[in-house]
Image 1 (tube, one colour):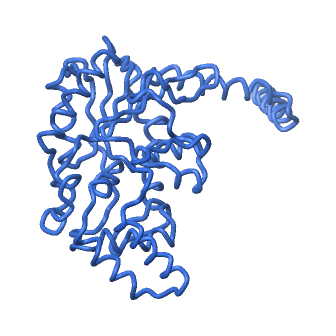
Image 2 (cartoon, rainbow, N blue to C red):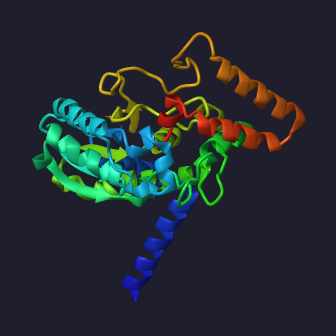
Image 3 (tube, rainbow, N blue to C red):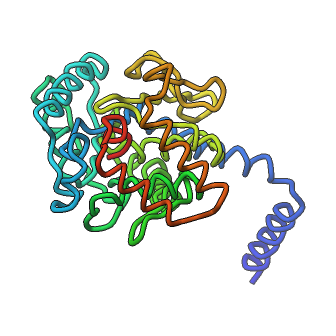
Length: 318
């Protein structure tokens, strides 16, 4: 009886100290210790790489007959993947790797192409296929002219919020990419700590990469809308900062080695100092649409764009 009373008194004393804040410092130190242990277990670097040139990058009409998930690399895209494998071989050195790849055919082929180019497959400890980092859903098939009409509407609605019929907006993709990133850092990678996987390679899509960076660096919607995809098989490297316990953009380990993901300064590539007569005509039609709010003009623009696909438009997405 006396022992039980003593135990109860000790518990009450502990709870009193807990409620009174006497143990706050100890609890905060415990939380900080757990956080540090988690970050020590995470890879030294995370590499985000876009797939190589795909069939959809060079022939937009293929979306009318072939599902986006089944598009393959072109010969150029395969060579880009091999070249990327050679580059990454020098970057990862002897690191064992955790690889995450989109389930789409072009990303799978990119990973295999990188192996053929020199990325050491023997150093890959885990390959995880994640549907959460697949390409933005644009609908099952895309009829001719849909992309051009969408461009016009997107300029009015905004690149982040615009959603094609039966498709996803960038905001929709952000939600699943954000969930992917949280689970990757809080659960998936810490579970592999015993395997000492020092590099995490994520083979994915241009928009997915931008949205991971938006999540990581807490970009505003306005900042996101100033950013465009990196080129095929270009990569972004994030290195671990244990002092701040975060991942930071590493310019030297990225390819190309430049900072291009901020509102200011903006990285701009000018194709020409003077727009073509055709482009000036389209801009005039868009201005007329804006002034009159006449949606019938959308079909006119779409019809003209369908006849005049430009290389620049082909490479913006996918």
